[in-house]
Image (cartoon, rainbow, N blue to C red; front, side, top):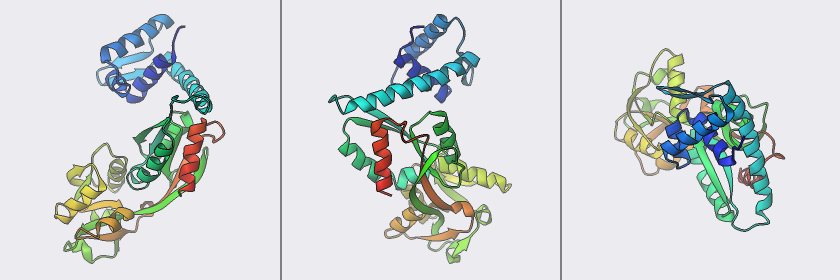
Length: 295
């Protein structure tokens, strides 16, 4: 078998994306070229690696075996790369970081900016996911580290405290709910909502919580940031759920009021999770230490 690391990286990207097109886009490859490379891998092995279906692709049993070994090989290559970086100028390392919506928008921008400024040889591949998805992906070795809500079970991983926050309801100052000091999530589902885009981890989380109450979110509009959500809440488009840190900040310039949520899930202790600090590449260990020091 003559697979190089770029072949393995492409195959993993396609499997994780569930599509040859999206997997190729992640690596900035032409779809035709990516498809040809995967077919060449299959021809070399003499067995299919992917089930190709109308809605996407899924790995065959042989493909799942390749995924397992490819991750181990690429992780080892990354560790080698990181350990040698200190000896060779211009060699770059890459850290794959998964984060839930809250940490991604409110707490990561500044420490990541500081880290990247002081580590010009390192790139960070940052992706938003649900906390429970992140735990599973870290355990499988898909990413180096994750930021998750402490409410998920991460006992199989090494964890470190990162931040504390809570989700609150935000309403216009003259909204009927503005008179409330606290309320349960299930009590506000009859109102129109302003939310984040459907791909957002938080929006999927809230939709699931609403479904468990036998209701659905009445979303009037979906936006890309918590600040934009608050702006449309101020304009009486609907109510929203945002981190308290966001609500406090924007309340200085917007006519909104925050209402505490009584649900246990509204409390957000954020933690850093990894499989093993000792097994991380040097630059990934430095990022963990940087985030811990900034906590």
